Length: 339
Ligand code: 13P
Ligand code: SF4
Image (cartoon, rainbow, N blue to C red; front, side):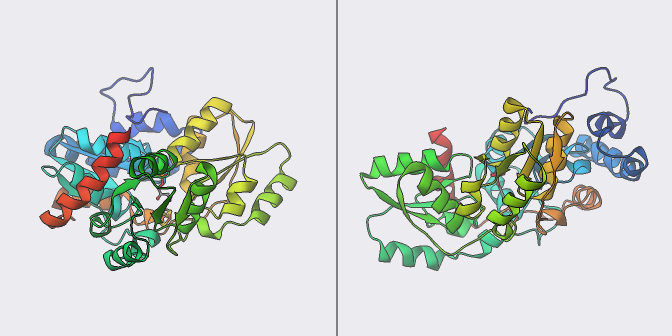
């Protein structure tokens, strides 16, 4: 699906925003349930117009946010790219804190709001700037490749950032540029090992884990395959390497969407956060979804009511220390320049 959501075919663009949005999820969400969202969806549409605001939503947002109020949806990489170019005064990031920080880094003139300041990430919390300096000291001469799921202060200590969508390319690029055959890749040890296996490049890791993907096991996949013959299993690379090895495909949330669109499997199991299955089901009504999901408590701190309040009160605004932001921006810009 496209990153930028548009009016469904056959509907009048002057219809209520909540009615327009319902056309995208009619086969997924009962009408009575959607009716409870309509007031907030219409109010958010009004507020966006009044404040020249846009809502960017990560692929793990629930359908009423993803289809109801988001102007742009995507994985971490797509959200960063769009944030850089967005033409608005205000950006509300329905995702987690590091995504909003990245948007602010890339577009410092924009007012960037988060609906809930506590929407964090276990990976971002697992690593500090001091940890990065210690790793550098222990492995002199190696580049530091940092997953975007980190604070701006950690990015500022890094040579380049990556996302799950471009990690192989970034690792290949940076080791070639630096003339080394190894890199420090932080903070997700599973992602680092998975990317190392795919690229053949050795990595030094840090013991960070995504609390959502770390819970999946190869046994989960065996049970899914036994119970649902012919199922295609797609996993996020934040899962343990044994889980990724047992899947048919692993990729970022956007790469999962593209894979499903291209392969059009009859039966599908997504080894990732729960809302991914809803959002993929909305776009692929013919696919039978097996739903072995784990909820991300941070992503789920977002709600329509909080997005509405965020725009009404212009809270919670992301601010960054300028010196930290300048150094962190270098690492993110180097990633985006690689394409
Ligand atoms: P993506 O960049 O693949 O969307 O992943 C972000 C994330 O937080 C996954 O847990
Ligand atoms: Fe962080 Fe995992 Fe939640 Fe993604 S799913 S935001 S990596 S805790």
